[in-house]
Image 1 (spheres, rainbow, N blue to C red):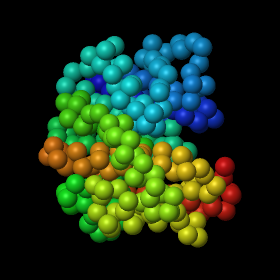
Image 2: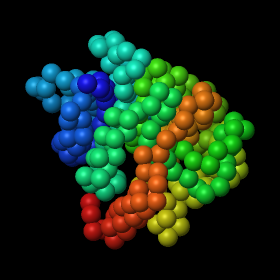
Image 3: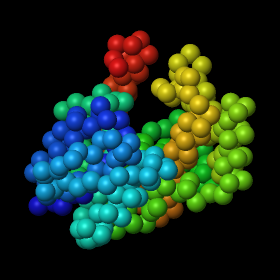
Amino acid sequence: MIKVNVIVALYYPNYYQRVREEIISFLQGFDYFIVFVDNNRTVKPNIENNKNVTWIIGSNIGGEFSAWDEGYDLLVNMKNPSDDEIIVFINDTFCHHHFFTCFDRYLYRKAISTCEDNNIYGDVNSIGEFFSVYDRHFSSWVSSYFFLGRKKNIDKLLPLNKQSGMDAEYMRYLSNALVSKRVDVPIFSDKLNQHLTNWLFPVNSKGWYGARNVSQQLILFKLNAIINEKLLTYNIIEHDLLLTNIYHGKIRTLYNSMRNKLYFFCKNNKLIG
């Protein structure tokens, strides 16, 4: 039986119950172990009855990325998984900031059951043109709400929260640019910085769903998560790993596009919470 270890970054208390149900649902038939990381410090129950589940309080210094690092450290200390075991990283938005159906459940299970030796799997996005990180050119990246791979490959990508190692001067530079409503990440190409500017400071609701009426501190926190996300793909490529889109193919691509468009339409028109 395939051994699967899942590290879940939690923040929203009202998301937890469905997140737990969906994860346990797509793990049926696998030999699984789940680490829930409570970044909000209010989600962790007093008693956990499932022997295949454990909890840790997260620092939230780097959102889901620090949660995944902390959860992974706990997993290794508790279970010492073998190099070929599957490691899944997921956050609590996967079934809330996207419509999540039985088809997505099937694709998650398929990625786990067919995980190949040199691959990292996830929802791969693109802006339709090439951009660069550290002068390495690529046109797509893995969205960081869900990705997985074998432990021996995950180890090559750690730590996931690379922004925590940046000095104060670098962080001030990023923050000062945001005051002017622009993104200027020195390791990113102009094209990628412009794309992120449009995303974080959207016009006509086209961009980050949380962009309205947020503090400067929260925008910087979000930008750090985006930088970590792009550095994740950069490191996948640098280590000669294959980035595999679970929504690859005409039907899956169309489905993924439609579910995201429908979600944002419903969100922008206040049809869903």
